[in-house]
Length: 493
Image 1 (cartoon, rainbow, N blue to C red):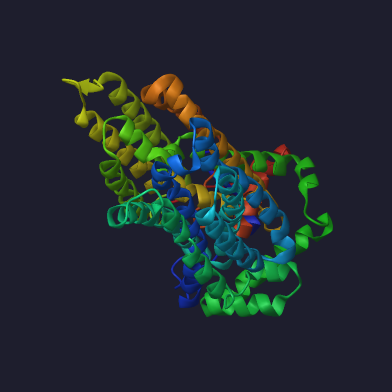
Image 2 (cartoon, rainbow, N blue to C red):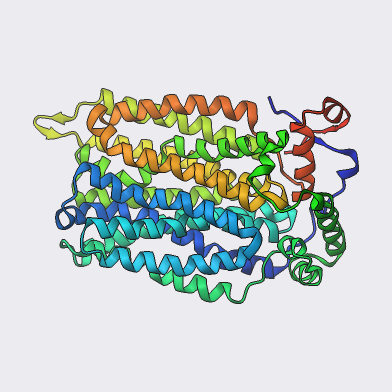
C-alpha cells in the first residue's frame, strides 16, 4: 500500500513553492484547454441530439449505441496516434492538427445524411477528442511550474465540464427556440467555433521547454522558461531538465520496447489503471445518456433536457472545488475521496430506481425521476470535484519525460476503449437489467476500483516532473537496495 513517497536524497531539492507564476503561462493554459472545451462539447452534445436524430437517421438501440460510442472508439486511436507522434512533432504541432480535425469532424457530423456517415464523422471527431485528451494535459504539465501544475492542468477538466455544460444549454436552447427534427444538426455544428479559435490561438504559443530540450534546442527551452517562471527558478529547472535527459540519452529512441524494463512496465500498468477506473464508475453513461435515463423514469423530453443542465452546472462548480482542493491536499487523498464517493452514489441510484415504484395511480412517479437526478448530481460532485481532475493530473505527471507522450497515449487509449465498451453496452444493459441493475453493476466495479486506489496510487504533490520520475523509479524498482536506501518523505497536506 502506498503511504509514503520515496525520494532519492540527491533529488530532494526543488523549486520554491512560494514563487509566483508568470502571467504568460496562464495564457498558454487558457488557449490550450480550448481542446478540453471541444472535448466536453462534442461528448456532451450527443445526449440531447439523440432525442431528435432517431427518426431521421432511423436509429435502433444498437445504432444509438454506435453513434454515441463511435466517437469514443476514434478517441482511443487518436490518443494512441498523438502519443506516438508527440515526441517527434512536438506537443504544439499535434494540437494544431487536432484543431483542424475537430472542425472537419464537427462539420461532417452536422451534415451527415444517414447513420453510416454520422458514425464515420463521429469517428473522425473522436480522433481529435482522444488526441486532445492525451496531448493537452502533457503540454500544460510540461510548461507549468511545479507549484502551479496541479491547478493549471486541472483547467483541462474545468474546460471539459464547461464544454459539456455548454452542450446541455445549447441542446435545451435550440430545442426551445426552434424544436423540430432538424434541431440536432445545429447542436452539432456549434462545435466548429472553438475549433477555429484553438487553431488560431495555438499559432502564437510556444512548445514546451522539455520538448525543446529533448530536441537539443536549449536556447528555445530557456526562452520559454524565462517567460513562464520567476527568474530565480529558470537556471535550476533548466539544469534539472538537462541532467535528467542526459541520464536517458543512452536509451535511444523512445518506444514500446521500453516496457521490457520492469519498473517502466509496472508504471505503465498503474497509468492504465488510473485512466480506466475513472471510466468504470460509469460517469459517461450519465453524461451521454442522462436525458434518456430521465425520460425512462417519467420525465418529458423538455424536462429531461432542462434537468440535464443541472448536471453540467454541478460539474463546473465542483471542478472549481477540485482545483481548490488540489492546492490543499495530496493527489492520492483526492483519488480516494472521489472513488469512494462515486461508488456510494452508484449504489444510491440503483437503490432508488429499484425500491421506488415506477408509476403511481397509472402515472409515472415524478419523485422517482427527481431522486435519480439527485443521485446523478451527488455522483458528479465526487466525480468532477475529486476523481476526474486528479486523474488527468496524475497521468500528466507520472510518466518519464522521454516516454511521456507514448505512455500517456497508451493510458488514454485504454481509457477510451473502456469508455467505448461501456457506452456501446449501456443501452443494451438498460434494456436487459433495467436502470437499477445497471447501476448496481457499476457499483460493484467501483468496489474493485477502490481496492486498486488503496494499493497502487502514488503521491506526487509539490515535486517537479524530474523528481517524480526519480521517486517512481525508486519505488517500483526491483532492486531492493535501491528501495532500502531511498529516503522516505511524507507529504504535507
